[in-house]
Image 1 (tube, rainbow, N blue to C red):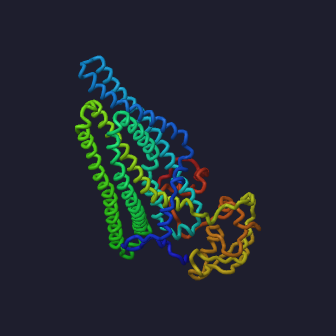
Image 2: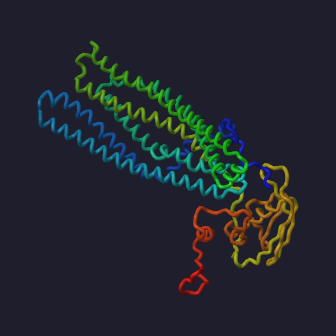
Image 3: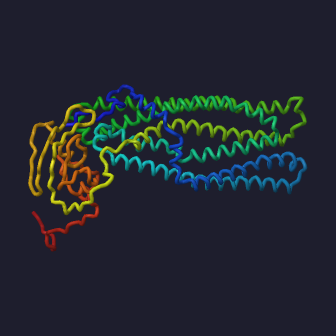
Length: 486
């Protein structure tokens, strides 16, 4: 009856590679970071609190290198036990305070991130609930499931930790750079030579990871489709009766193999960058020690200052690497946001009217009229029904008969407003169906479908699905002892 295929043009049905349309590629490029940031608008207060905690933690942690310099240059050479105990106590206190602040920061940031994830999942689910049947007939079920679970789940680390990671690492980098300059501005300049190659490598890896992420999510969606088609009740019956089980196994195996390749490419893209940056980062301390030992620098730096500076340098490289990694993660996650926002931006084809007619469903007699209705399925040039007119008075019965594909089920779908007519109108007691709220329409028109769909629940829960608060009928058998049967 539906002339269009339920499989979109961006999917595939065999073992070949997934094709990507130009529209998909353009949409993946055009995801705005501003739109992503708007997801956190309702949590600005808590994000400000997290930022304050991060600043306090970063500033507190910077005291440790200066305490270490005092231990090496003063307390140990002078054998000042009192000063040594005070400095050691200060170092322990710094560690304890930063640890406590870190716990508070993690709790708040994780809470905010999980609430954003919850809202995103709910928004996508609610919006998809409002889509017409046409959307679901042209979209693979596994594709929908993959976007709600795999795509939103894949962006969890970015949503829950990106904002705090940026604030934490940026604050630490700035504070550490200031402290390094205070110790020795000349050595600070030597340390900064690491930035240009690090940024260049990061940009290359970010672009590569974004492309791989988009390919991986499409492959995951295709894997979900294979599971949905091959392991559902209808799919198992079809594969058993047609003998397509081996072909489904080959399709699943090929898709899973491509996922292995994509995961390896994604991991290796980050590993060679980290290996290159590790070499550069390891070179900088060696250069600093060499600079401190040159004849022109001899005697200008104390051993404590040199140790404190190299300690700060290690502290600088960690958050600097963290910032670069966040950039890679955010860039790669834009492919996920593109897929989720694509669903959120879908127009609602069959929706409640802007100014609905207020009715009492139980008070409507139920006079149904179909007035010169024509309807074509999306993407089809042939009308499924054309110029149909019917008059069904309240309390009467009507049977539609015809050969397969003549439009009987299509007309029933129009009566329940699963679709809207291309031309003409359908009324109940003179009210156009498009002027009624969808909930009121569902209360007016009851449907007993040809193919029953049962939830994986008890019989009682299935019977009460439309009205969970429906009372349970009492048994009509009179009370008494159970009757025995033979």
